[in-house]
Length: 452
Image 1: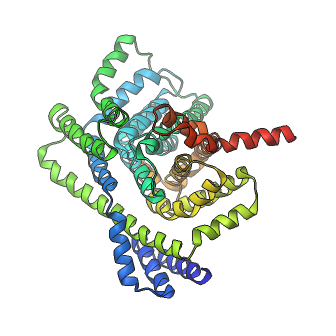
Image 2: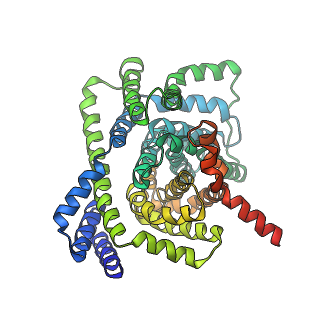
Image 3: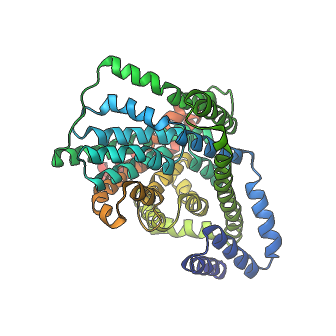
C-alpha cells in the first residue's frame, strides 16, 4: 500500500505543480500507480473510466447545466432581484440583503454559483456602487452568497457526490441541502448587517403589499421551476434525471417564448457551452473512477480511516480534522475533483463514527463552497472581481468576515445533523431508522457536558 500511495501522491502533485489539467493529472497518476501494482494500466484505466461515466444518473448533469445557461441569459435574474428588493430592501444596507437573497434564489434555480455571480452580480454590483456601497464589499457579498445555490437544490455537485459515494439518493441529497443553504445565507446576511451598521449604508423605500405581489407575479414563473423539480421528485412523478430534462424544457419555453430574452440563433452557442462543460465534468468523473479503483486496491481509504480513528475516539475532533483538511484542499482544488477524490477516502471514516452519508455529503459541499471564494482557485472570487472591476488583493480583507460566517455555518451544519436530515426524513426520502445513528454528535456533546 505504501509504495502505491506514495507514487500516486507524488505523480499527482508534480503534475499539478506543472499546471497539467487536473483530469489529466488524475488519469496519469492513476496510470503510473496501476503500473507499479502490476496489471495492464491501459486496459484498467480504460475500463474504469468507461464504467465510471456509464451511469444513468449522470444524464442529469448536462440537462441541469443547459437549464442553468438558459436561465442565466433568460432575464430571470432581474425579476428575482425585483422580488427580493420588495422583501428585504427596506432594511439598512438593504441592497446587500437583496443581493444575498437573489443569489440564493437564482443559484437554487440554476444550480450554478458561477452563473449566480455573473448574472446577479452583473446587475447588483453596479447598482450598489451607484448607491454608495463600497465596491469590495459588493463583490464580497455576491461572491459568498452565490455559493448557497450549490446547497439549495437542484445542484450538480450533489449528483457528483452521489456517484462518488456509491448509493446515496439524489432526492435525499436535494432535500437535505435546503436548510443548510438557508443557514449559510442567514450567516452571510448577519455580516451584511454588521457592515451596514458600521458604514451607515442606505435603505430602500419600503414596498407596499401590492408592490410585493406585483414583483412576485413577475418572478413567479422563474420560481416555479423549483416547485416543478422538487415537487415532481417528491411526488414520485419523475426521477432526478427526468426532472433535469423537464427543467431544460421549462427554461427553454420561459427564456425563448415567454420572456423572449434568448433568441433561437443563440441556442447553438448555449448547446456548445453545455457540451464543453459536460465534457470536462465527465472526464473528471471517469478519471476519478480509475483513481478510486487503485485506491481501493491499495487499501488507501481503509488505511486513512484507521489513522484518523486512531487519533482520537472523539467524533467531534475527527470531524474538525476532516473539515480542516477539506478547507485546505478547497483552496487549491475545484469542487468536482475534490468531491470525487476525497469522498471515497473520508466517507468510510465518518460512517464508522455513525454519521449518515447524506449528512456528510452536505457537510463536504458546504466546506468546499468556501474554496470557491478563496485564491488561488476561487472560481466565484475571480468572476466577482471581474464583474466588479476590482482585484483579489483589494477584496480579500473585506472577505474575511464573510469567510468567518461561512465557517460558523459549516460548524453548525457539521455538528447539528438534524439541519441536514430533518427534511429528508419528513419527506420520506430517508427512513427514520436509517438516520437514528446519525445523531451521534448530539449524544456525544450531552455525555461530555454531563461528565463536566
